[in-house]
Image 1 (cartoon, helix red, strand yellow):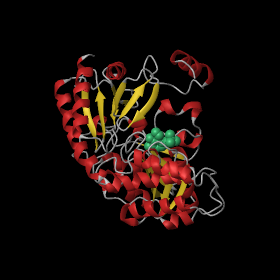
Image 2 (cartoon, protein in one colour):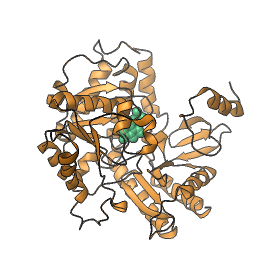
Image 3 (cartoon, rainbow, N blue to C red):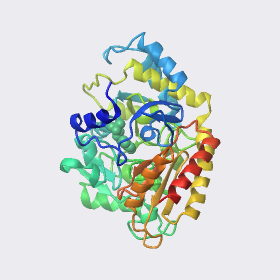
Image 4 (tube, rainbow, N blue to C red):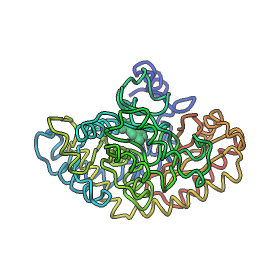
Length: 429
Ligand SMILES: Cc1ncc(COP(=O)(O)O)c(C=O)c1O
């Protein structure tokens, strides 16, 4: 076992520098249970980031882990060239949860990046076109193609060269790319997608990929009309709609299984990962059957559909249902939102509060009039929050957003404690 100081040094010496850490002094996490993580000295932190929106039902959840332990000693791996109970059971369960039950066929992988690779491949195979519309300020993963889909320079290392991907403006109401105000804007950003197709593509596209709420972008939440307008434009140009729900799925946004359901649109493909496995690596691309069937030919993911990860995911979904966590995400999410709005009224550095359910963000600004981004204050708030014993996430193209995403089974008492400590952290800036 390495001592704490050696651990940090070893990480710096033996990991790629691209594996960056939060905080001036890296935080070493030794163990976790439910809503708490513990550092190397045993100090607890109330975790309101959940390993980047991945801990959906609490750290080391007792029920999920019991199912995983049983499966670990029963069948660990055979690959997808054989039929297994866990993969089939999870695929059937997911099909029953998709909007209108319309997306019924799953392809399992190990990450959100791979889920998106599969979604884009399916769009291209199904439509016979190759061009894709993505959005500015988006994040879709770390493979060469996923970086090219991504709309933030910081996450497009190496140049991200991929012909056939163009970026439309996003629905960033706090910083409207057209300088307009909702609702008098008539959702200009959505209508502009038609112009993007007309001017930056061949006119026949494979699809459109978007996050219902842009996660890494700082929980940028489009107005309710946005996706239905865009979906119609996309379909008129022959494309399909891929909803990247790596962050927004499995109840995170409250009352619904998928973020896109708040917009009354049924996508053709949903991609997801993160919260599905509560920390075990699983990605899924779930599609309408005709789209899935369009992917003719062979494709394999050695670990995709692995018995351990699919067992964990099925246990997570069952638990979300049994404990009615979709409702808790809505109710406790609204409670959290109220607390954050109170903090906005008290601290001038908070320019915007946004999100849905238990996916809420603060955008920090130097000045509420100019809306100049405040990345330094954001970094300082991260440090202060750590000192006060709470974990929050950073995000935003300008490095000035705080992301808040506790487990879906968080209580109002935990939210009270979190808000109290966040208030103290803001006061300490
Ligand atoms: C919306 C979205 N899509 C895709 C990804 C990539 O997922 P992964 O890191 O599991 O490859 C992420 C990761 O943060 C994400 O937030």
